[in-house]
Structures are given as C-alpha cells and as structure tokens.
Amino acid sequence: MYVKRRYGFWMTLNWSKKPLIFGAIYALLIAIISVLMDVQISLPWQPVSVIGIAVAFYLGFKNNSSYDRTWEARKIWGSIVNNSRTFSAAAVSFIQGEKAADYQKELIYRHVAWLTALRHQLRLSRTWEHVDERLNGHYVPTICEDYNNKLDNELARYISAEEIQELKMHSNRATQIMRKQSQRLQKMRNEGYFDDFRHMELHVLVGKFYDDQGKSERIKNFPFPRQYASKAYWLTIVFAVFVPFGLMDIFKDHADWSFWIGPAVSGIIIWIFFLMEMIGDYSENPFEGTYNDVPITSIAVGIEIDIREMIKDDNIPQPMQEKKGFLM
Image 1 (cartoon, one colour):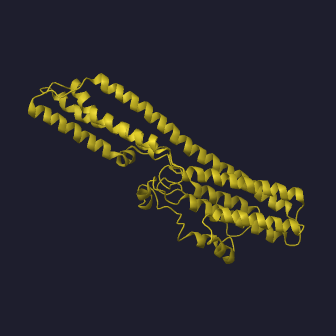
Image 2: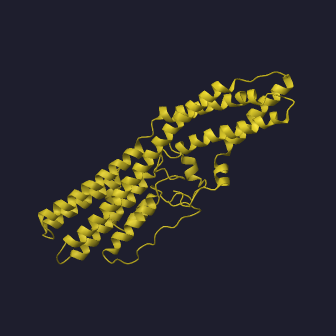
Image 3: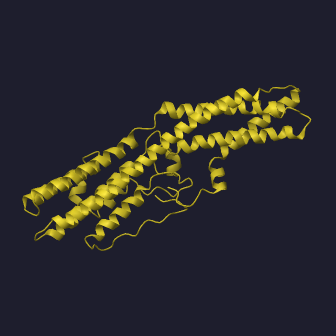
C-alpha cells in the first residue's frame, strides 16, 4: 500500500508510460501516412466519442468493483485486528491457575503463528495476479513473505518444532494452527483453568477467526470475473484504435501546424483511458503483494505488538516502516 499523500506525477507516468508512447507513435504514423498519400483518412469525431463514453462507463464499473474487493479485504483484516485483541484480552483475564502465565503466552504466541501462516498463504501467487512485478520488486520493495522458505523459520519463534513438523502434513497451515488452538482451549477447560461459559466465549472467537480467514481466502482464490476484466481491456484497445482517426477530423488541415498536435493529443487520450484500466486492474487482487495491496504484514505486526504487550512479553517487534513510500 502506498502511504504518501499522493503518487508523484513522474512515478505515475513511468508506471503507465507504454500506452502514452505507443499511442502517440501509432497516431503519428497515421498522420504521416495521411500527409504522404495526401488523403483524408479521418472519421467523424462524434461516433468515436460515443465509443469513448461507453468505454468510460465500463471502466468506471470495473474500477468500482475492484475498489470494493480491496475495501472488503481491509474490513476483513480490521475484524481480525479487533477479534485478536478481544481474544487475547479474554485469554489473559479468563485463564487462572498455577500455570496461567504459561498458558496465556502459549495461546497468544499460537495466535501470532496463525497470523503469520495466514499472511504467507494469502501472498502465494495466482495465475491471474501480477506475479512478475511482485517478484521483481517493480516500484515496490521485494515482498517480505516467502511461504516455502521463510514460513517455518518465522513460525519457530512462536510454536514448537513438533507442531511445525505436524503442520507440514497439511496444505492449509493456518487452518490447522487454529484447530490446535481450539484443542488447547479444551485441554485448559478440562484442567479447570476456566469454566464452561468462558470456554464458549473463547471458542466463539475462534469461529470468528475462521470466518475472517475464509473471507480472505474467498477474495484470494476467486479472481475478479475474467469476462469483466478482459472486456474492459479489449474495449479500451478498440477505442484507442479509433482515437487518431477521430482527431484527424478535427486537425485535418495538413498545411496547418496544429495538424501535428493531433498525435500528441491522441497519445494523451489513449494514455488516460489505459491509466483508468490499469488502476482497476491493479486493485483487483488486494493480497498479491504489489502497489495497491492491503498491508497485511504491517497489520499483523501491529496485532502482534498489541497482544504481546498484554502479557508484558520481551523482544516485542517495532511497527513496520514504509519503504520507498510503500507499506507491506
């Protein structure tokens, strides 16, 4: 997620420069052909503008839908923040007995392990995501999650080696960590560390964590419908093809110096429409680890700080800082 006040103009231009360059070159070639052949190859601007209006409406629909996915993802992780604090406060308050401090720490550490596994799983690549740009660190620091190489090392700070080894037998480690958490709560209830009522309250929170995980996985594993995403791209190309011909009708006097402004104006119009399309395209997948991601790593670290402070733990991490204007 970009956290500065606004994207810089040159940064935006550099990110989306290809449509501007190719659009201007394409329009210039049409203008040169028109001059060399001494023919008018223009189209009336009115039908071209109608196409542009239709494409603009469609891009607006796509961008609104993409924004909804991003905002829903942020609300889900806001729920995880609130429920994590509630669960940890309940664990600290409810668990009483000889080993209460050890059990409180175990539950909170396992919850951090669940957050760690979940964010790693949500950053796994999908075929419809912008994987190359994420891995190459294009405009953004290299993604901090690496499910295959880093996850076990991070989990080792919170749960035992035996538990990590057991998790390797399962495809969804976050699910199994929360299952283990539920089993430990039952064991504590059997040993009398809290009563049935408090056990039920804690288990309700476990259910909410599963709900939030499932909602996150729904966004991650079900892409923005390809028919809508693809149509927006191809309709933008169709409009871009006709733009130079429509502007030729306006700047049609070959002898006038303003005729050569047409290719530049065409390039700008094409760039604006493709920029709108790209904004929607890069907002569809809020967990892919690129420019417009929901900063789940930063959120998870913030949760860890809050809940470990509840047990007055040592070596609590610092809040994540932005790098190059991006917060992951």
